[in-house]
Image (cartoon, rainbow, N blue to C red; front, side, top):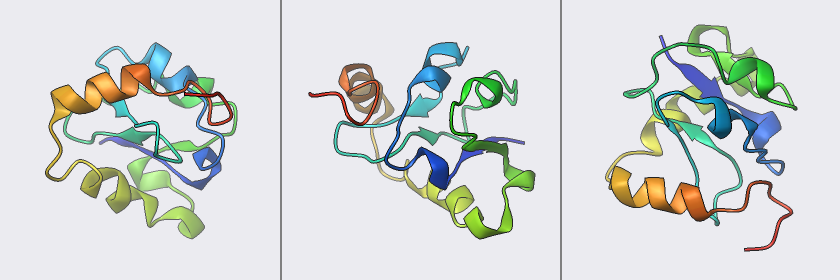
Length: 101
């Protein structure tokens, strides 16, 4: 199973989850409004879930019904993207949405 980042992250985009992920499977760009977990890389360790300050991270099978659309969104976000490029964009993106580029 993988984890999903849902609606509470939108507009907040706190990078605490990125800092604790042991496999670096959480991505974003400066233009994105949230973080995304790559389901093909997530090892289901749950390290990200307790550090999220807005309770936006859930096991994929436990995402609240009102945010179910975020599970496929976390998967399709990666379609056609170069992960090496995306890793660099994640590294240089603001750590919170209100930080300047």
